[in-house]
Picture 1 (cartoon, rainbow, N blue to C red):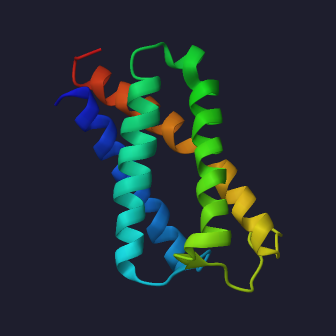
Picture 2: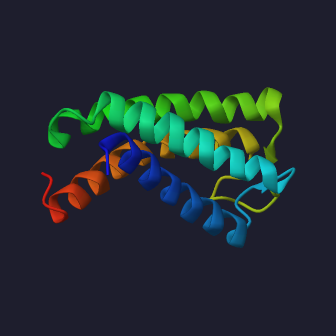
Length: 136
């Protein structure tokens, strides 16, 4: 499987797992299921997986590029969560606390920063799967 496809599919899988857990635990609530699907396809798959993990990190040693992947993913995530908080309104935060945070802006900032993990984990899994498949 070509590298870009592998990175995209791994990020999609991370998105499905993340959104499934978030839905089960009611971390956030989408206005419609279609918005959750778009989030997984666009933000997880295209932006974080293909854009950040593969384009920026897919051609360098992970140990050296991981901080850049994290910072880039987190920066995009904070902007994305902020856009939702102030403009998009595609999802909302329930009244329950999230990791001790109760204000929606604090939740958005924390989740935005957590987006930095997506390209790092995507790149790590992609390299492990390539190694396991004999392509490393």
